[in-house]
Structure formats: C-alpha cells, structure tokens
Amino acid sequence: MLQDIKPQIYHNEFYIKTPQAKDYFFYIKEGKSLIKNDKTAFPFASFGEFTDAQPDICAHADFLFSISRHDFYLVNEQALPLSEGNGYTFAPPTVFRTLSPAWAGFAGATGCHLHRFYRNRAYCGRCGHKMEKKQDERALLCPVCHNVEYPKISPGIIVAITDGDRILLTRYAGRANPHYALVAGYNEIGETLEETVHREVMEEVGLKVKNLRYYKNQPWAFSDSLLIGFFAELDGSAEIHRDASELASAEWYARKDMPHNTLDISLTHEMIYMFRNGLLPS
Image 1 (cartoon, rainbow, N blue to C red):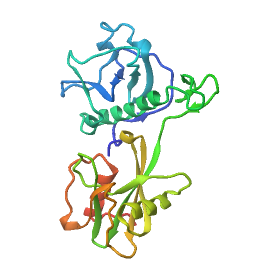
Image 2 (image 1 turned 90 degrees about the vertical axis):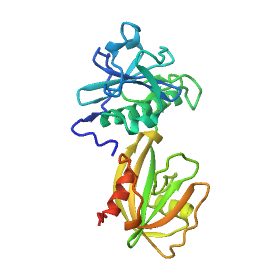
Image 3 (image 1 turned 30 degrees about the vertical axis):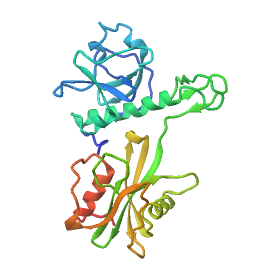
Image 4 (image 1 turned 180 degrees about the vertical axis):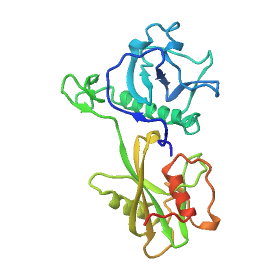
C-alpha cells in the first residue's frame, strides 16, 4: 500500500528546524505540486537547487517530517512565487499514486495533506483572526481566542461484502477512475465503526451484513482520511438496491470472474486481492 515504504522509515515527530541545502521541499499552488520533469531524477526540489535564484527561500519554509535521513519542508507559496520551467512542472495529486521511487509518492501525498490543513485553517473558525503556527506541536493557534486546530483526519470504513464464493464490487458515480472498489463511507458523529459499516452498506446497496471482521487500516492523504477495512458476510437477501447518486455500478462477482485492478497502493485493492486468493481473515 502507499504507506508501505520499507526500508525507508517515516518520522513525523514535530520539530522547529532550519532547512539545509540537501533537504527537500514541497511547493503547492492551486492544488498542484512542483516536481521535476526528469522522471529518472528524485522528483522533489532541494533547497540547494533554488538558493541562487531564491536566496530567501529557507525563510518561507516549515519543517513537516522526515523519511529516513531525508527532511521535507513546505514552502509558503503565498510568500514566495515559483513558476514552471527550468526542468520543473506542476502536477496534480494523482501523480503521487505512481511516482518513482514509491516512497516519494507517499511523501508527496502526505505533504499535500498538511498543505491543505495550513491553507484551510488560515483563519480562526471561532473568531476570524489569522491563525499562527504553534511552536510545540503540529497545530495552529488563534492568538486572540486561543482556539487550537489540528490537522484534519477523517475516519472512514471500507467493507468487503462476501457471499460464499462471491464478493460485491462497486464503481463510484461521477468519477473518471475506472477501477473497481468496495462499499465505503465516512464515520459520522456518535457512531462506532461497526455501526458505520451497517449504515453505509444499507445506504449504498440496500443489504444487511453480519460477522464483521476488522482487517487493516490505511492513512489516505488524498482525502485527509484514515481508512479502516472490514470483511463482512451477507445477511439475508442478496438483491442489490444501488444508490445511483453514489455508485455507477454494484454487482456480485465470483472469484473466477473478478476484474483485475492494476494499481496496488490502496487498502481497497489489497482487500480485493485477499478475497480473490482465498486469504480472508478469520
């Protein structure tokens, strides 16, 4: 999955640091990230590559995290204008799904997640004053009313519904992504994760499930989420009542007839793979 970056190690401890020439930075403008055109090179720019053209770039950078011995920062695009050219281009977040090396894709997606937090919480939601970065943790603080905001992480469930040798596969409505998926949805206020599974399954496909088994979880930076995977068995009628506003399709597939997804970075893909190969958790 995307976060499986061994032998690299992700370190998200909070520090106040000053960038060094060898350190890398994310520069994100209108939702797109600055990366190198040369696909054989490491995709992100280092500070040493930009200090001649932008000598004050380090003054507009905040430390985010490290991966092994590599430090990554976020450069404030509102304070320092950078543009395409000289071997760089702006790419949408989907580029991180297939970036090489794969751990750089995880880094880029995580950097985008934190960038959205800093931009979307620039002003206090309680009193409207401009927020400031806290100096002792990864959070924003209102200097007037002392409201504290932390990075957004939304819990959501993914559920593989099985019926003997069959699994329910879906495709989302209104999306260009052609890959098959599983029933999924966000946890609501006051719900347990198991209650979310039952509600989302009923809402999206009109089915009842039983024997829920937790499988695994995955941080999914593309939607600021933490995804929690369950396997569940059909309970009662197998007749699907699809919510057309959510799903373009929802069908039962026998193992031998299951379509193959080629992208292997997601929890959804791994759960589908597990069922196809008869590796269901007990």
